[in-house]
Image (cartoon, rainbow, N blue to C red; front, side):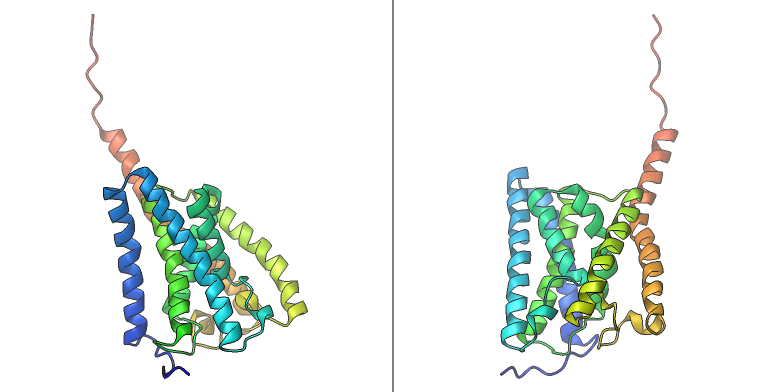
Length: 246
């Protein structure tokens, strides 16, 4: 039996876990980019992909065997579970099309889950460790693909990401009715405190989430848009080379 107490939102263990994820998420890609060959960089990407899949399998096993949760409720059909699979594919296959989707899912969904985790057990409970390991690896993986593989979203990626999410909702909603589950939190809000608490009652919070997904996607695209505008202005103001006359 674990002696861990309940999760304290923004407590020492929670904040420390988020800070460790941030440090690894930035530090590992920068180190790999500066010191490793392209082949070695890819091997690190494969390792992160393997860790993502391995921890997802372990997490499902843990919740089913140690905490007696039904397997029907443990399928990777929440946004974060789907992000685990997509991030692993991005890193293993160097798939840009998958990156376009998971870039926005990771920042809009996985990051939010790290800030307000749907978790009632604190450190060092295995469920706490598995939760932050899995969600943290998604953030690390997306940053790795951005900084090492040099992937970046386009404006069209926003609509592609949201379009795929709507397709997932169309598939998951009837599955929830069939299995009696709450994937994507389509049937009710998380039990723990979250941003959804401020988005109105069911089903209106789902519409609010859709609008929030669009707004947050635009925000997470802004660094690239600003970079493009700065680069374009720099090219426009750069003096032209003198022409030679024969």
